[in-house]
Length: 493
Image (tube, rainbow, N blue to C red; front, side, top):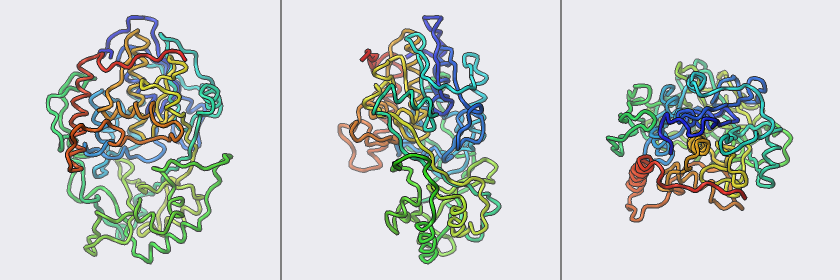
């Protein structure tokens, strides 16, 4: 690994990054922090997309949630590892955090503004606003990272398809609606977090005192509760259903008309982000055991859980926008308004944004990529983000973090390395490059893909915390060793 602020041995070393999403921005920050000049291409606003609303870098177009933020879940562990590796995305998320129980959710506008400002002001980062329709030329001194995300333009998609052949795949994703807070009927909803589970500190389960933030060389301090507020009332607005109300809602949902899925011949949705109408068609109780599950939420007016619950999560710091948790949809907008106004408390709701469906583009990682996020056939080219075959904001940024480190190392004539499989970030790289290519689909980070403990505790929670404790220790060893756990550079196929 390069030391922070080291200048490359080769003064002509540069890095080109295509795509200003989470992965591209994280990669740019990492490489620039290591002294390698970066040119970051973002096609917006010259070429808009169907779902982006601004020209800011790292704009979140789906949920505003980065999911769990405790060390007893895998994505919480991944976040902590990224913090220790100096992640810009994690720093921006902390600066724009909004209440979300045990999850990390952000004010999406402030988050994008923070990322855009940091990169615009970095002396080694040049941001170019133009569409890239071909994969740029690359070399060992001038590598390229393609991090164009799930909405890669048609022209560049065709170029990538030509490079990876039949391994170029796609699936459909959908985003949730957002409602105006003042139009929610507060007499019908109640405020609570599931199981009263709120974030107090990421250090509340595994103490890791004395560790260093590798970006600044400073001690890592325990973080306060979300937004400095933990008043015990919970971070979600909950819309409770009776059995009859749920039956009316379900009937309307399964008979609602969906929007046309563009001009693609086959719908292939990521299993972890299914539209609610797709889930509903699997059975009348599917939603009640999924995004509408009432467990852990006691209605204070009845003293017991409702038959089903829709949760609303604060979407910005002002608290005037709330998103429907897990309610991604491809229904026509008029149908969305009709169906969602059957949710108790949303009868008069005004929708700031309706849900929509879009195509996600990704490659078959095991046949295309190495653990370093290099393309096997062309090792001076890296893929990162959802294009590389990971799913989720945090996973995308994590791939950009390692790709940025390794691209900077390649440009500077140094060894490339990836954290060990005992860490979440290393396990993610291993999964993408070693999963079964015949049945490959994008994956979120899970404890299941992290190398198991040799003698795991029987208790499930203790086992997770033991994995997290080992991961943070091994990550620190990897950082301290500098060039340990080396993954050899990929040879030209």
